[in-house]
Length: 388
Ligand code: CA
Image 1: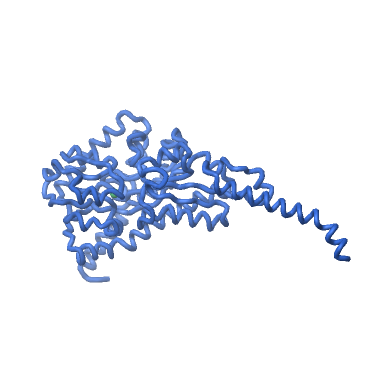
Image 2: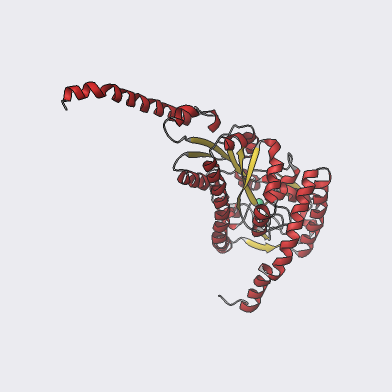
């Protein structure tokens, strides 16, 4: 085959191939710079040249790179990219980068972002039942919440609650039992809560207010300064691993337990319905399973890191560790029961979520008397102070 004739014969084909590659590259570039999420791209042009690619924006209620809960969205993005072979790329934005922390729900609902990571109880002003999907005082722990959501009907109710807002929720990680929080004074009786200004969100904030305090809703990134400048007298955030990283030991002296208000705070991924439905089924499955993997991973990380962080807080920073007195906890429970009744009074959906929650909880608690709780008590009785 002569060179000249080969060139003559193949040149148009080479030019066509190059043109096709250019069109494909432009299509991908257009997808990358598209600001409106996956559903606004030119699907047909890309479908002609292989698997479609999608880019999502995910906004969070946490400062970027915050350890533990703040890394959930970044882990989620990594899992999704790896599992999809790069067909779904999720760009993560921390609080304030696209929208402030407390506007994440609206941003995803309206399609400003495709997805979000935060906590359902931040939105209780819009959706009263949302508190049950994060944590209610004296409620279920992480293990029980996961059971209720995934095998007890909880997640279906959550989807029902968010459907009018164009959102699909997923469990997005649990911190496990939190700490009661940081205080600038000792709490020896319920009267010591009177006049106290505390950052404490969710239903617990109402319980705290009923006990005579003032509950304030402040995003995590602003807490250190609020405590340092005396805007608040107390705060709850998460637990030793996160609280040490935020430096609260520098602005408060007393660190109280247990986290009566958040015995297993469940975080959330929210996804814009159109963004989710624009994905092919396999990518939707990847989103679901990546969220489920992150959900378990977070609890594992807190379980691994909290004790070391608490040891440092007490030994290196001289933090005063205190347990809330029983009569204070009992008073807070009385307030909780009343707040729950008021919450569901005028909201039929909240009433049915509460019914489902308490039914599951009563059963799990009953069984845990002879399983988890019995075992925890027995190992303390048998081992005592002896190391394992
Ligand atoms: Ca908390």
